[in-house]
Image: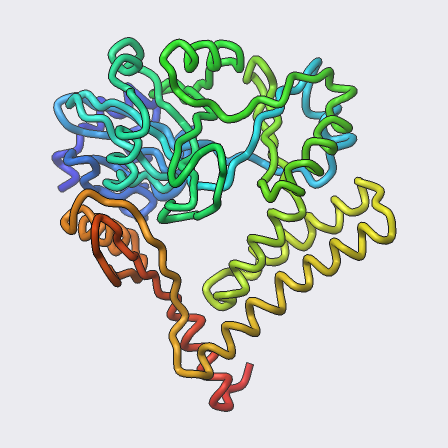
Length: 378
């Protein structure tokens, strides 16, 4: 199959030698697949300058859709922001959904690609319903729209945003296809406005010496509103961005994970607890505020796990139901096939009147808790 791969053209586009590409294929770091109806190479791991999640389409024309770069996190706002940024810091909202790259391929098809590099049929369909992208891609076929699919009818990460409604999309970056170079903040927002595409909220651009205090105030407000956090960016986008999240977001994520405690790795739990310790230190909370934080953290751990143990003791399996809007049964089944292709244990639990109930099973949690309830050792 490797003989059909245009290694020379890929090397010209990416600068990665053919030998490195072939080695990546042999090791499984790169996989030959079909995405969006076209043959492609999917990068499961990063290779030289190419990020994990990169997709290289190998049809009539070699086309590179770079993976979205990992955004590092700061545990302390000060002095990190002073060390990392230069003159000013742009602060945008980090929304709780799933990362999607939308692009128009040389075939003329517009596709929505998930963080892992897979074309999601549900997301593609919904993105085209939510936004008119024809004019944008007709004029800017070299750009990738990077954003967050959010809302309570979200099949991956469900959170209610009153201003969004059941499902919505918010753009946080515009990036060049082959280089992954992001447009500067002002250029990006002006371009989005001119095509009527919805950006994430920009709280402001602050002098670097004032940024830590401004972000702390923003985070307190976002936390009280049940929202996630912020991404801090160099206005010119020459420097890598940083992210910072609210205590309430940490608790929400822990509560979700402890509902399925054996399907999440220990680093997931530990990292969020560490964030809480540093945030409590930096925000110089009162004793009452720290106690409230401790209660929130403890309740997020104990109650969801206890509820799950009781449910499994009563004979239930660990699963999660999500209801999504679809056009017909075929669309619902197509999405289930997509999840199974990704290795997710999922089934269509119900369908009626355009509402599909997607049931995702957490088998490790079911099996391990049953084992312990029957006397197994930890």
